[in-house]
Image (cartoon, rainbow, N blue to C red; front, side):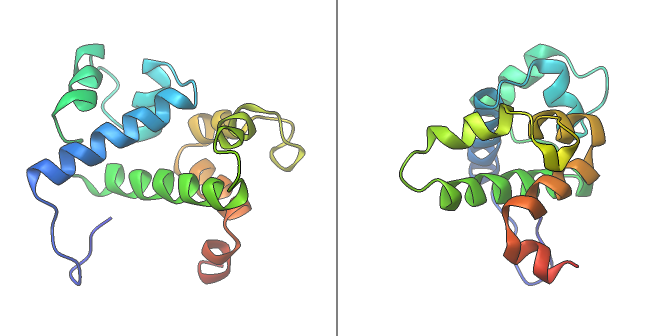
Length: 134
């Protein structure tokens, strides 16, 4: 998520980001196991750790987790611009089956397909992201 041109986030900023990401995943209706999978956390991550991410603990600062967080934030931003007058529609869209994803809901695409699923959903929503990364 961060490269050499950007300044690293401090502990408080990373904790705030973790809280925001966990709220997003909760709003998308993902259970604990799905959240662990989507964020690429270790398989045995206990539920209490997810609770800590909601409170005051930053997510692990790994390339894999940061890349997924970047896509999650990009998806939320694209949903915000897609549905500017009704923010709850983004949550509805994420849970509805979509023919673009073989009749799977975008949240299931992301959980089942991992990073490729995150990229597919983001590319579908954000033509600017898809344009620059094609």
